[in-house]
Length: 143
Image (cartoon, rainbow, N blue to C red; front, side, top):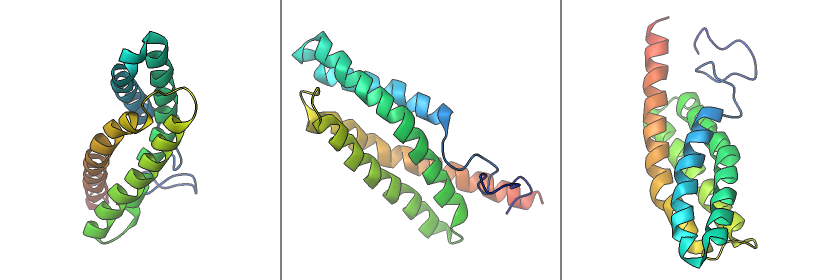
């Protein structure tokens, strides 16, 4: 553990344990735009509806799952297991929730709207887990 951990609401890197608003916002813009164009051929209203649902979902759930990824990457001692868990668990949750949200009324192509998450989430979570694991090593070396 690093010196930054001062409360039960901070993870091993000293960040708030439940939510990452910056990464939630980045994901919301990217995935919302992609989903808009997937659904645009059904009309602008349907495209905007799907994009807004995806953006809101990604902000809250994506910000939470990004933090979950960080927490797993920094809490599990064995590096390989930490990276595997930090990618597999948030990706699985993200896919299930994305499909569920788009299956609700208002998205003309729920399965197609889930495909960007299928391709982007594992790579995004892998990059994030490796980055956070590296930050943890750097923080522990500086103590």
